Image (cartoon, rainbow, N blue to C red; front, top):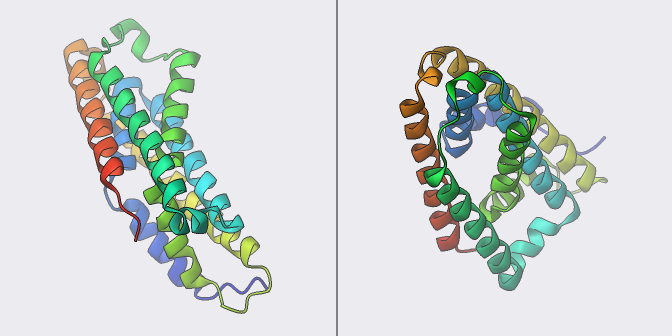
Length: 210
């Protein structure tokens, strides 16, 4: 009815793409090591919400606008790159949390982790272009409700990705339980995540539309 075809292949492709190691996985694992399961789950949900922004954008044509308009693409690229670099620098300069508070992260800390996950994806034009290129492969050219078809496929992709990130968070939190008791180790995790954000910011700034 929606014009979606090869749904099984789409789900399989989405799962493979989701489990392929990348910045999102590293972010979830890093936050899980820092803050335990709740921190990793907050990161995973933030990433998923950021992806939903691009799925909705692909459904209503904003992603196509980014590809067609070099000005719009450049503005989003620079805003996203600046956000990532600033966030990375804040992580590099931050002090590790006290060991007594690591297992019970404050609500404000979890909100910050969630929002970082949202903005990391929402402000990355590369994610927008990915959905614009990937989703149409599984929607018929004569589909009567293309926006709804894109939205449906995007939600399926986000759902499988969220499940995988939550699994990663659980395993990473359990494996790093003792590590989280060491402020020195947490400091190194902060530096690693900060370096990752700065690297992603530079990559985003250098991204060119095709």
